[in-house]
Length: 136
Image 1 (cartoon, one colour):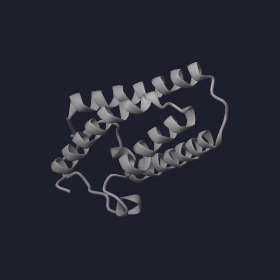
Image 2: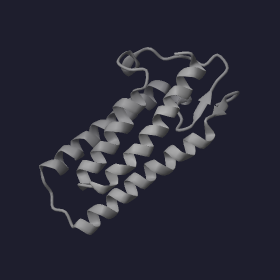
Image 3: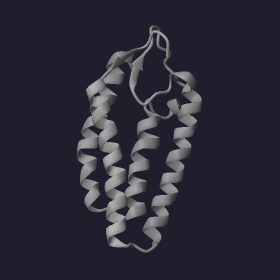
Image 4: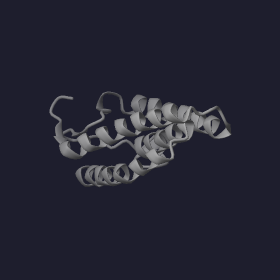
């Protein structure tokens, strides 16, 4: 987006790497276990689908200012409608966190769950960066 400045570059990389690691580790864990479908898988799939719907809504709401990275525009608009009435960070609380939980449940990836610890740290850092930069 024109005129935007990127912040938190290193943290964004750690978030992306950890996110991909969770997906890869969960897939490997499911492959090794040769898991069969269960109620837990079904719950995980439902959570994952809802999380992806939330992502679609967030992207639709933010339009051209949506990005995976932390870019701030001059006179950055603060959205307070739709899902943003529910939480300041619907992409994180209604998409990303449920998405990862859904993946872990879908794949029964119990060992991969440990990766949520560093991910949570990087996500908290990201949220604090955003709130400070946007004065929210």
